[in-house]
Structure formats: C-alpha cells, structure tokens
Amino acid sequence: MKQVGILTEEQNGRVKDSVLGVISYLRQKGVSVCAFAFPPAPGAFTQQLGHYGVDTIYEIILETDSLNNDPQVRVQALAQAMQASEVSFLFGLTSPTGRDLLPRLAAIYHAPLVMDCTKVDLDSKIATTSMYSGKTEAMIRAEGERLFFGMRPNHHRKTPSPETPEVVAFQPEVTEATGIQYQETEVLADRGADLTEAKVIISGGRGLKNGDNFQILFDLARELEAGVGASRVAVDEGWVPYTMQVGQTGVKVNPLVYIACGISGSVQHFAGMQSSGLIIAINKDPKAPIVAKSDYYLLGDLFEVIPRLTEKLKARSGRKEE
Ligand SMILES: Cc1cc2nc3c(=O)[nH]c(=O)nc-3n(C[C@H](O)[C@H](O)[C@H](O)COP(=O)(O)OP(=O)(O)OC[C@H]3O[C@@H](n4cnc5c(N)ncnc54)[C@H](O)[C@@H]3O)c2cc1C
Image 1 (cartoon, rainbow, N blue to C red):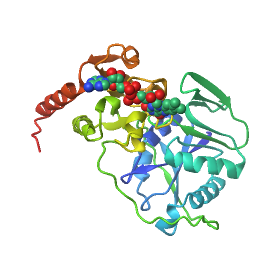
Image 2: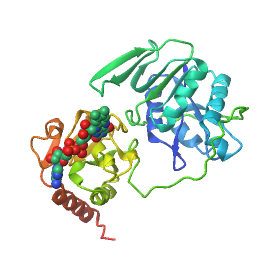
Image 3: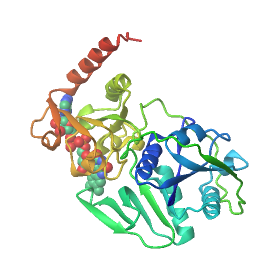
Image 4: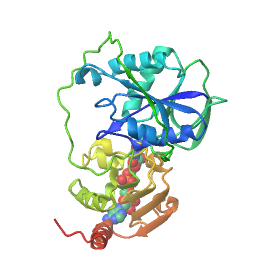
C-alpha cells in the first residue's frame, strides 16, 4: 500500500482538527499515513492520530524548546525523518506553520510544492487549488520523486478510522540553526475559536464603527463557540489585529457557517470565505453585494440584531449575565 506523510500541527496539546481532516481524506484514498510530529511529550498524540487512521508516527524529539521553535531546525529534522521513512509525498496545512515549513522542505529537496489545495489525485499527481481570489480553480500536475502539498485548513472533516500506530522515536542530527531566539509568547485576549479551525465564524466590518463595538461579536461568539473575524477595513482602522482579517490578503477560512456583520462583501473579502458551508449576512443595506451572495440574510441594524440574538441564545442555554 502506498504510504504518504502528514506534517502534524497542535493546539493546546491536541492535534488540530484540520490535520485530522486531511488524514481522513488521505485514508479514504486507501493509502497508509505516516505522521511527522513534534509532540510536547512522547506519546502525546499517539491515541488521537491512531484513532484517525495513522499507522506510523515519527516523534521528532529536539533537545530544547528554543530548537523546537526554530523553523530551520525543524525542517532539517523533518527532512531527516522523511529520509528515514518510506514517504515521498508530504502533506501539511496551508497555515502559518505550513507556510513556514513546507516551502523550506520543498527547497531542500528541489521538489514541487502546491499550496491551498482542496484535492490531490495521488495517481496523476494533480492538485486542485484556487487562483485569482477564488474566481477559478487551477489543476496543477506536480512532477518529481518527492512532492509537497499544503492543504486548505478545515476543508475536509475528520472521520475516525482506528489503527494501532507504530511509534518511531526519531532523534535528528541538527547542525544548522538560524539563531532565532524566542523571548516570550504573548497570549492575546480570548478572541474565540481559531479561525482556521472554527465551525462557526462571526466577522465584523466597517459597520461595527470602532474596536470597542467588536465586543458584541465576542459575546455572540461565546454563545456559539465561534471564532471572530474581520474585514480589512476593521483591521486597517486598527480596531482589531491583522490575525483576524479574512480575505484575499488575510486568512482563508472554511467554517460550516459564516456570519458577516456590517460587511459589504467585496471580492477580496469573498476570496477568504466563499467556500464556507452557509453564508449569513447581517446588513442594513439590501443592495450590499453580500446580501445577494449569501444563503440567508437579515436586513437590519447590527447593533439591534446581534445583542438580541445573544440574549436569546443565553436564555436558551440558561446562562446568566456574568
Ligand atoms: C489588493 C487588495 C486586497 C484586499 N484584501 C482584503 C481582504 O483580505 N479582506 C477584506 O475584507 N478586504 C480586503 N480588501 C478590501 C476590500 O476591497 C474592501 O474595501 C473591504 O473588504 C470592505 O470592508 P467592509 O465590508 O467592512 O466595509 P464596507 O465596504 O464599507 O461595508 C460596510 C458595510 O456595513 C454595512 N453597515 C453599516 N452600518 C451597519 C449597521 N449598523 N448594521 C448593519 N450593517 C451596517 C453597510 O451597509 C456596508 O454594506 C482588499 C483590497 C485590495 C485592493
């Protein structure tokens, strides 16, 4: 059976759902999957990866945390682990980590890399990705002994397919460090679920009028266990950080439900969220492009609609005002 590799990513000590979704997608193709992981402790991901069908796990152990955070060190370790394995196709996510590591790895092997893939045919080696802000799909044939693919996060849903994985404790010989020194990690105030992983996203645009007003979106997000995104205007105005920007020059998201509040629906914004399962617009202008492009819309003032929605959800869940 053909074996392909997956570069895992973690969040809060668990493998990201988006990674498990890619594993499920690969398993459905009848291939065996080998995971390359940097676990916080040996065995930390074994049960989870086994549950979704991984049959070999290369646990890459680096000596110190500072080495673990150095992308140049990580790619050397990954390249050595790939060399030691049978894997010639490596999949990852088109995420900040994937964008950091996959091109470096592909460069080491002088191998082709296709990012933001929604599908990959392993026999013809054709990857499907989007181009021109999502206006067209490109089918790119990759050629070579080793191939690298960055998959669109959250595009494939995880499905259990239990296996008992073999775990290989892999200690790489790392020679070249970039000298990157991590000083500290700043944890930002809770902004709801991670946008690339979220099942529901509520985004705000110019209609929110200022940064403080985003609080009404955070309140609703808490009830829906949603992530909070933003249009570029909200970011350019300094109301919310760039990490929240959805669109052509921001993050590309694939939630089951996307709720756009006070966002007109520019092509650049759509480029980042058009593959959402269901699009709901809350806007006071019936002629706003988002209204025509949404599955459902609510015409009204978001400052009235959103707090009422939050209250209704709170009442339903029996949660009291804190
Ligand atoms: C190269 C390039 C890249 C870009 N990349 C991105 C990107 O990644 N992401 C992105 O979002 N944009 C991007 N843009 C910008 C994009 O073109 C638009 O300018 C931007 O998306 C508009 O943001 P908006 O919808 O919040 O604002 P607007 O277009 O001003 O829309 C505001 C909407 O709010 C509604 N509204 C106002 N008040 C209320 C209220 N009280 N209740 C309900 N509705 C209300 C209005 O009816 C209107 O529809 C890019 C532009 C360029 C040129």
